[in-house]
Image (cartoon, rainbow, N blue to C red; front, side, top):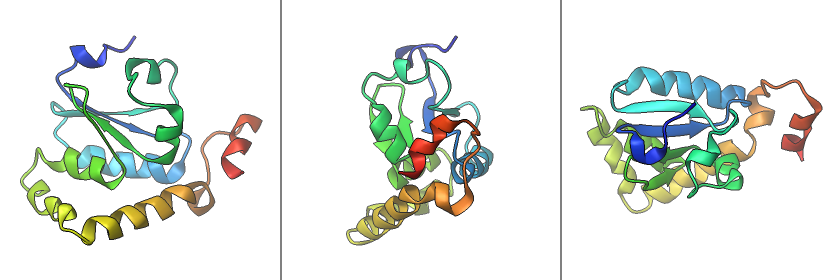
Length: 134
C-alpha cells in the first residue's frame, strides 16, 4: 500500500480530503512543491495514519501536517513554510519565524481551520461527516 515513513525520501504532507478548502489548498501547494521532494496525501485515506505513529487523528483534524523522512513533523502554517523550503520562493516564507508574525499567522490559520467546513463545505456525503459540524 504506502511505504513506511522511514522508507520514504520525501516530505509527506497530510491534509483533510473531506474539506473542500483543504483539497483546494493541497492542489495549489502541489503546484508549488517539487514532486521529487514532497507528496500530498489525505489523512482520511485508509491506513494513512498508521504510517505516522507520531500523529493523531485529533492533530490532523486540527491542522495540516508535514512529516519529514526523519520523522520530524510540523503543523499548520509552519507545515506550509517547511514544505516550501525546497524552492527559491520558500526563502521569503521563512519570515514566518519573525516573532509576532508567527503568532499572527498561526492564529489566522487556526481560525480558518476551525471553520473550514463552514467556509466551503465538505466533500464527503455520509452522515459520518456530520461530526465535523459539532
